[in-house]
Amino acid sequence: MDSVELQQMVGWLATQYQRLAAKAERDGQYSAAVGALNALRAMVVQPQLDAQFAAHFRGRFTHHSYRR
Image 1: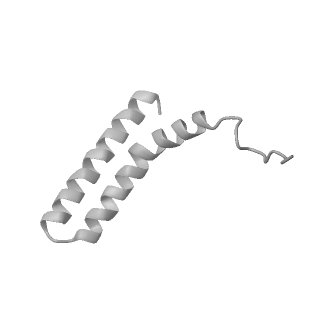
Image 2: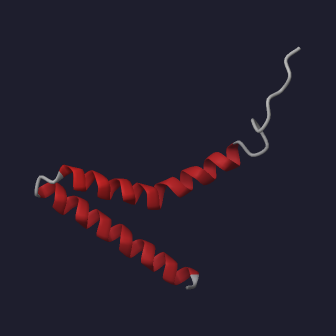
């Protein structure tokens, strides 16, 4: 798959998770709504946060410094 197809698939999945969460919340199925929103967060938001975290701490805090 090329990057355009992957972007389209991620967009489609995000839309489906959002619809599922809205429908589950409307029907009172709050655990299903939370699960859908958690999956959406893991797919869309968390990779960006992981990349920011890795860039911020790159090369630092990988080993303990000795105390004097």
